[in-house]
Image 1 (tube, one colour):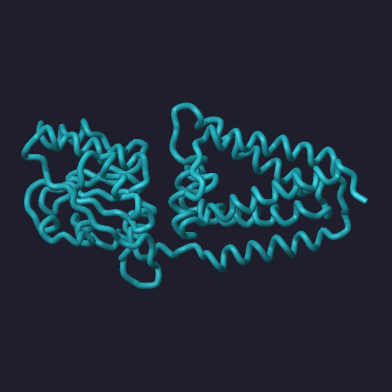
Image 2: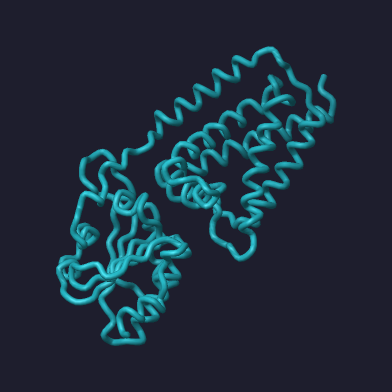
Length: 317
């Protein structure tokens, strides 16, 4: 008959199991391609130092490992010798990364994808609590060391399913095959904008992206300062279509826009938001044109990030 202490420890194991499973599922929300690529890989793995070519492999490995740990932590097979230590190490590594982001960064860290947005500080607190619980489980649990081959089989099965059900997309449908400077304009549905002469600004934004909102608000503020400010057209992906009204509330007013599918790798054509922007460009993407000639392209939040001052200088100095 189980003692009260044993019941408490097993309850903690169920809690950690649910946490790992929720974390894995959340990284696939609202669609596997969006959750893994735009939120987990670009939001967490690439900032940790993983290259864009390696991140897709590691993201699927991590999600598979979370599912593996969520199952195995409920059983005694190598629990204390392997499963709990592996869980502790995984959480600790991501905690170290989160500790470098807690000051001044309030954007979603990607730990629970877009399902449960969390700031780096919130995620770090969650991880510290998780580490304490894992330490208690380790101290109070015993394990069986007779069926290691079952763990190997389970891990290989989960890994195989991860890479087969969520294949790493072939980026062969690339904009690089288009030599002209108007390559992005090919996907604009507004003919008056795409064929128009003179300066114009094309933007690729995620409606729920804080950096995109700030860039759009800066552009809107510049437009209020000069009557001759170029026309603006925004391309959104359909994954955050419901957040578009909120996006324009933050910006100040609504600008012409279109919505396109986030990903579509079933055709040979470049016909989705992700195929146009990823992996060469990261949100927010702001492109200044003079007719069909590209003058300046801003991308991401690092050295090539959008600068309202720089845009204003190019336009009016």
